[in-house]
Image 1 (cartoon, one colour):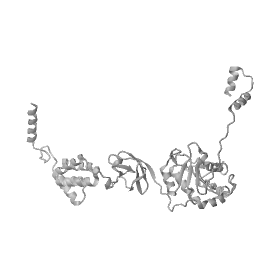
Image 2 (tube, rainbow, N blue to C red):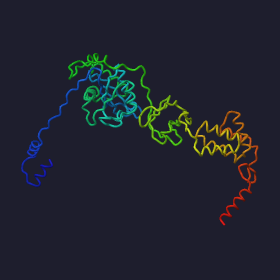
Image 3 (tube, one colour):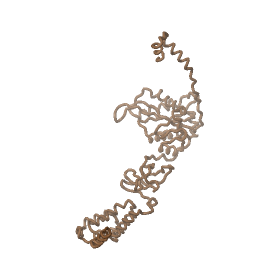
Image 4 (cartoon, one colour):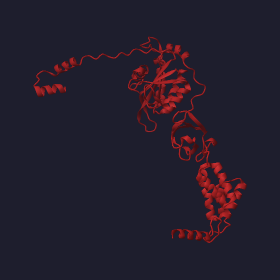
Length: 412
């Protein structure tokens, strides 16, 4: 049309638009369509999976109709399909729909062909795709291999594409349902009465008869279903721990400061190595504020600053030093602040009262800062410290005077 308008405006073209159109078609020539041969698979060898648009279903929360999602899993040999409806989607829902399809089929095919949607494929790559970790583990549990299609090339899973279109055009076209359960019941009835009993256009055989032949070739289902978990990434902080739901878990020293993948559920927390993607350690789930510190992950050498701090504690009192050593042995570097808190009590209550409190804490088997602090607050027997009070940590004033005189002579 643009060419025709320019010809009329600029060159006084007197003929009709159809003349220009016929000439353009003649120049363009005829495109040769690309051949798409039928992919023949052995029984139990392959399944194809995809999402499609489902019917309108009333949302229980808003009261408005929303478009449901149609999940379709189709066996490559018999064309037997499992169609499920869902109102929302996530990586876990995507994996749970696979499990429901496997249970309905009574077995599992050896490979699954899928599109590069985010629920299944994190990074699309024909040669080395990155699968969603949860989806990958679910398929591993059932003994299935996932083969994503080439990006922007969905013809590889044409059987499931046809199954999606078949359901959209036949039972679900123009339908509205009040609940997702009613929609699923209607779809299951159509599947049993019409979809399974039809004569397939390509195989020229009944779908249910071919499925009866294919079912013995499917991989048997495992005894237990998959145990779902949450997953994410966490930073190993400078104290050597990463945090999950307010609890802390110590990682190996070589992962300090790195971003590591983790998995957790209601029973345990799993640490995955960021480079090898192998399981490093499994921890039992802890309560908020608690820590999991395996002995082999504790630092082998005590830092010089901590050694000096323990020496100060021993100089403040024999039992003070023993209590601080016990705190460091139990809590490691996490107990440094507690040791500083113990030494701070000497400035507030005096070394004598602190020594007595530490002695009682060791005898009672409660070597903690909290015990020492509570005891000193309830038994403040020592008077408050003054500037004139004699303390073993403070040298005589004559020592300071001699030292100052010595420096003055050197400066002269």
